[in-house]
Length: 86
Image: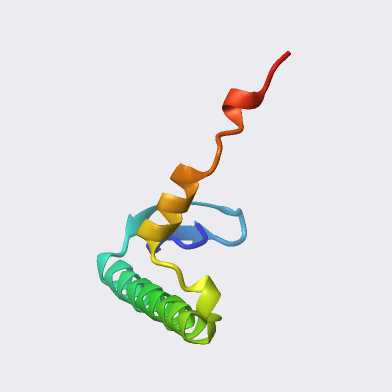
């Protein structure tokens, strides 16, 4: 039941160790837990985005190539698949 928002409803005889009960989904607790999870995900995504911005800031100029330039370089390089022979 780890991570599941449920409540036990029932009775339990502690002397005989038997009883009747069921587990019910707790919607209010589930909403609260979901909101906490969403906050954690947003904070994580912001930290990742901040890290990416910081890395771009400190990246050497030769590493800062636009994506279309990198694609053009890859297109002009010789293909290794055509040079393989058995």
